[in-house]
Image 1: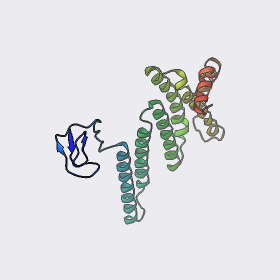
Image 2: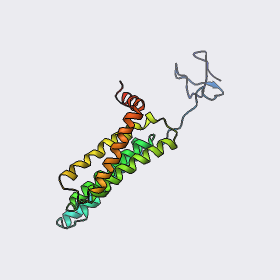
Image 3: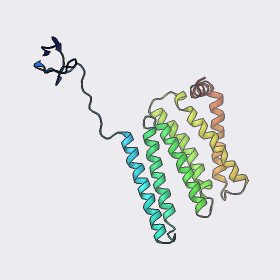
Length: 219
């Protein structure tokens, strides 16, 4: 233990000087009462900053190429869109890293939105609403159920994700009624299937659904 002859006090730990008078200490230092925690040099925020810097650098380079080529590079907007998608996926993964079901749900919604945007930018052939959305909604519901059961979660912990996906799938009626969907069968079939499952959830799992809604809105 270290000792300050001026203040006549004993000091625990390993000090370079007396904390009271700043004088020299005698004696042997000893380990502190609390362990010294090492700080991680590379945190999640560091990943966000590096990824954002790389994204902005890539966009600036692409815009510079467009200027040099008199905006005659049709692939540049798609390259920028791809970079934004990759950045968005990374951000979602980091933000929801402790909730696999929420990560899968948000990632699927982003993928659907990207497909819709790509279809619109390429002249709208309708493949996004004809095939991507119906398959995406149905797969998301079944994957959510599989992940929830595999992780041994209670139904009330993930039923709200299933129910919201079922409700969002009903939006497929818009391109069906407006004739924007060239192949209507997959969309109609997926809406019918998920609507039946939504009715089953309300009738047979109402308590779990109500509990999930109450937790979501802090009721």
